[in-house]
Length: 446
Ligand SMILES: [Zn+2]
Image (tube, rainbow, N blue to C red; front, side, top):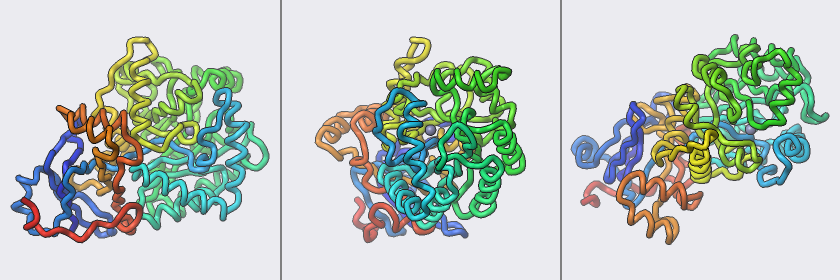
């Protein structure tokens, strides 16, 4: 068992945030060696039951759920920060060129390790990731994630048209490779597979139909793709599928809208599309830094909440400009203020935080598994230092409420705030971040 005494943040089952200024978190491994939350709450309430354990005391630190990134591209660590005139030129000029390198397993292995290092350094403990179209890119990621005990969901990109030699796959071979990855990796330890058609323009009807058949055959496997990001992209989809009611309806037509399917962006949707998301159980991966960077538009929070479909936050690196959940939450706040209807909303800091933790986990169908620290959850968490910079120390010391504290972290925070990232899986305790220091005995605690 491990026990940590610190300030705690987690979410009740009704999604409201709990802040325990002086709390205790107790974790213990399950039969698979995954640390799970045994108890969480006020130190004063739990000390009698758990006070005998060796307790790591972290005064001044905030323990919060590890962040969940709903949409990211592992091969794009070398694409981040590439300027372009919008989505389609950006894909052509940078993305496809870099992704072609992942045909080489050695390159994929080195880049995959770097990618996971960056996630963990920024406090992200679970991600839904695109690989490249090469199986090697996904094998490398899974091998590295397994060694670290990370919960990772990933897939090989399906892309049998409108892409250059080197990243284009073959219609049938791409589908066979996807199913082979499912057989070899899905459900192994903390790993999961995703069927990954890049987006409608890059997949033939035959490949989309095959992806839909895979999705039906493997209902607990995830589906990930992009939709309604950019106006030029939407016009292109309309040319390719003139009969379809909308871009999103193309995915529906091929059986790709269901629970555990996650669609990046979802900016230019209409009411019928949003109802389709809601009723199918599919979710939107809101990617605000990417949308601002590529000038794609603004996710409509008010409309999403009115309809009540699932959504959560995502970095979308490398269209996104940062691995940092703090930067993503701040960009989401800007996007909320703007709003599509010009009746912007002020997203509450604890709602932004929820969207990047428990809310994102819910969108993945992993509510109560990751993204939270309620008893039974896998104990992925971050140790945050609200005094990581002089300005943060000054500002957070003046915070009068949880929302004020969280907003100061969102606006001023980055990887410097993340003092440690603790991953629940076997190997995770000794992975990124320092292993727990020698436990201080209970008598050290006032
Ligand atoms: Zn993307």
